Length: 369
Image 1 (cartoon, rainbow, N blue to C red):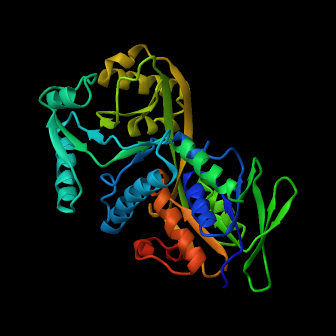
Image 2 (tube, rainbow, N blue to C red):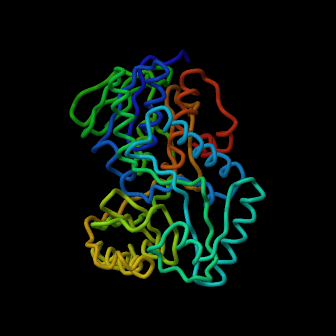
């Protein structure tokens, strides 16, 4: 197949935005398509933590996430870091011995893989990093200095602005209803829900929770495990914390100069018990108050249950699907960490037909027809 002249990127969260931005920089004619508003879906309702410390299930997946962290730093230099990039590190501690032992064992493994980790007491953390925390003075706290958080929707907006200024198209508020193929089975067009149709040479499926539906339009089976998660934003006159952290029972990070984001896997587990989002937000707020007492009087501003897009085996699906020339996938959990590296590697694959060894374990072909 020749180098595609026009590429449709379906789904404009952080992954799709990064793929399209890299394609545009490489000279492709790109059209971004999003059923909603770019950057306002899962990208805006995730914990948005850039890390590899939580990605030790396999060495190849860890290495890909380390590359994702480096790609974020490169991206900050390329487009400017303001309003989206916050490389302030990450804190983690536990209040029960079994969890603490597991965290410390993981830290030993990460150190053996040359991943920077530092250990402090709770008293040292309050003195050096986060004076507002109610962490016990003798607690063992891990600090990962190379980790970060991002304001995902701001990054998407920045990448779109640059791509559109360079000639890319944007069709938001309209969904892809069909993908047309030629007699040889290769991608030829996309039909949209507004009744229009676009001639294209390739499509990138970055549709997040809707990725399996988009795959079905080319008779591709992409098994997905969609995992719900509840995220709450609380409004603060003064944001008392400075970085992302995993405290006992709650995850917290700044979100702006006037808000904090809350999430908890423990609270996620209650989503299927008919708890309404308001009640889940209250539980998150209560947990946060025990860690940062100043947040006790901060009102809940927004709560959303989002569905994380996760290929069935838990790993990304990235690259070409040989049975459908011109069809590519960019579907993954941890899109915040992996978006910039997936964007760079997949764009290079589309434009040059060269695959990168970092993606060897994450090719779409591992899912059988």
